[in-house]
Length: 105
Image (cartoon, rainbow, N blue to C red):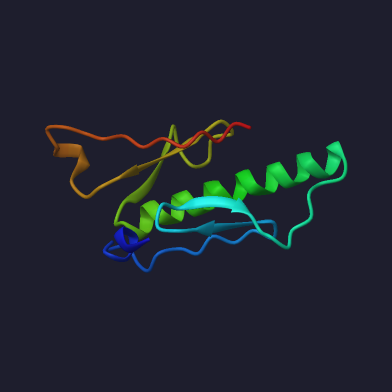
């Protein structure tokens, strides 16, 4: 998380999920010690869906905290879309690093 603190986009985001937490410096995510395991397939599916949603939110917020700007392919209003994170001046940069987060479950 120390690297996130150096970003220009704002403070680092907090990871927030009722069953999981971030531990250590390596951003490892593990089940909370006090969180009960799912007892049915339906509970498992709901937990997995909520964890994926929180991971998407956390990673997007982390990129923004690092100073990246969010853009959408093809655009934010499209029904099928994907966010990308770009740095200032990306349109004129000789080389690019693209970070694409899958929005399709």
